[in-house]
Image (cartoon, rainbow, N blue to C red; front, side):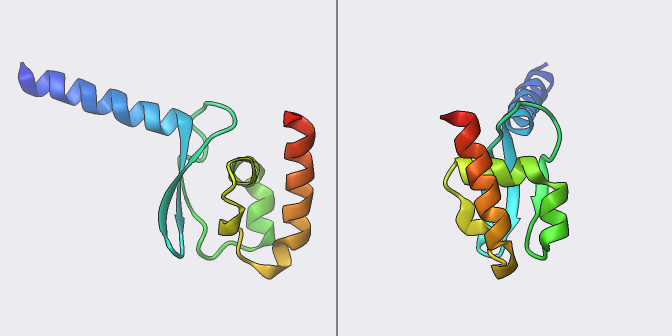
Length: 95
């Protein structure tokens, strides 16, 4: 019975993390970025080889990263314009 309860607790913790955080793998390691909306989309994202088109498909992740001051993970130099747009969008939503 104790294994069952341990499995239940472990599953509940994993579900909580999946609902409230993006697990982001970058060039410097793995980071937890709090989500803007609680859902099961984008639980694990490997951003090491992301290009602009990839960021456009993961706008909620980019917005969460900017909102939580993790925009340093948006490394590609071609993303500066996109980074500014997301920052302005987030500032407009949360001010």
